[in-house]
Image 1 (cartoon, rainbow, N blue to C red):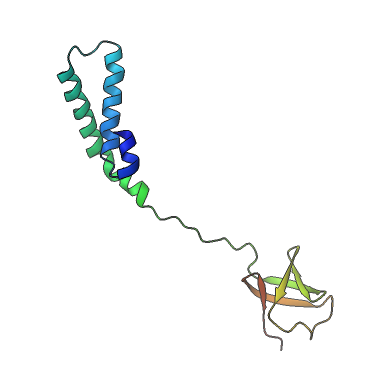
Image 2: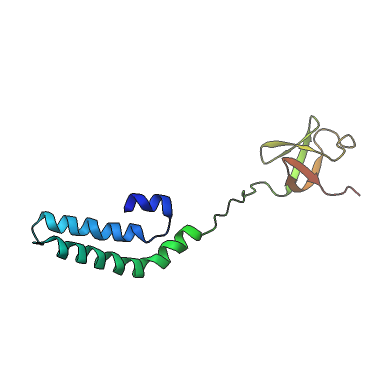
Length: 123
C-alpha cells in the first residue's frame, strides 16, 4: 500500500500502509492471535492516521516553491575598467554607451538585469 501511494498521491494508502506495518510489528511479538483482529486493527490505525494527517500531508505537497533567484548585486557604484563595469569584484557588461567614460570613472549602477549593468542617466 505504501508503494501504491507513490503512484496515486492520494495520501490515503500511505497511512493505511503504516497501519499494516504497525500491526505487523505487533504481530511479531505475538500480540494478535487471529487475522481478523490484525486486519481490523490495521485498518483502524490507518483510518485514524488518514483523518489526522491527510490535510497536513496535502498541504506539504501543495506548497509552492519559490524558485526566484536572489540578486546579490542590485545597485551601487561601479568603476569603468576596459569597457566593462567593475562592481563588487565582478565585471559586468552594459547595454549603455560606455565610450563616454574613461577607465577609472565611477558610475552609478541602478540594477543588474540579464547579467548586464543598467546605469543611471548621466547628467
